[in-house]
Amino acid sequence: MCALKRARGELSEVERERQQRRATNLIWNAAGDYGLHPESRAYDPEGYADVYMNSIVGAVYKYYDYPTIKKLLDGMENAAQGETWQDLFWTGLENCAYQRAVAERPALRLLRRGYARTVMAQAEDYNENDLPMADRIKLEHYRRALGGRHELAPREEKLLEALEFPPELTSEQLVERMRAILKDYFGVTGGMLRHDTLAKLPQFMGGLGRRRSFLGARVSSKEVKRKPGKLSPIGRITGDKTPEQLRSYVADCFGESMYSRGDVTNIEDRLCRDRHAGCMLHFTRGEFSAEPRDAEVRL
Image 1 (tube, rainbow, N blue to C red):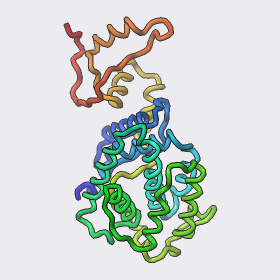
Image 2: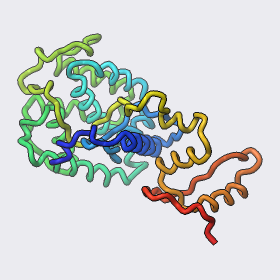
Image 3: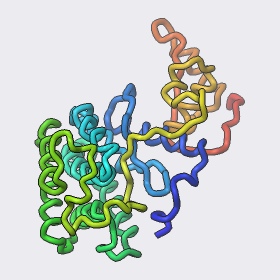
């Protein structure tokens, strides 16, 4: 599939920043916290913000203590096989966060099935045995989410079972479970997270150092690279920006305004008084458009 072959670097800097803002908005919605500064975001192989996995990131923020989880993710960051371990951890986090969130957000059922079908479709052009191990585990996890099943190698089967964390675990228990997986399947203990353990891996984990593509979305804590002096999206809100710049940022995150600029000004004049004086309002249906809106007041 072309989704696995196109490099994320093909996106322009402007588009990468736009996708980062969209990922942030999806996380805010799922977490129910619009003051959150997400430390991780999910992108598909082409670099676009993934709706389902960013919703899962938001659910992890909402139902678990993210700093506790992030500490372990950070410990994996610079290890030789850190990317693989992080992918596996997020497969497990998806399993428990989905089960915690779906009762409150029933739409996640459809989003999950759509995401699972995407993962399955991306794998069609590949021999499953040639996929990186983390992708084989992920593929089978989502195949089962759709009601299917494929026979994994015995050790991979046990690994998948261990990774499908139950929803009732606490954040600390999730970290303990993942540390146990790292120890049992990768020979990693304590302060060894940043060490190269490739030589200790059993045969079924071969090819871990040659990860060049991935199925579905990858959750990353790496920020979009910007030119020196350029503010982050959050900085655009809190920095010394004009009202029009702030309105443009909000529209990029949430969708174009339903009303013209003049109409919004009239509404703000009527509603934003007393303690709300100086506030700015934004009304949207969540629709995005590259075309600017007419600034004239509708009659």
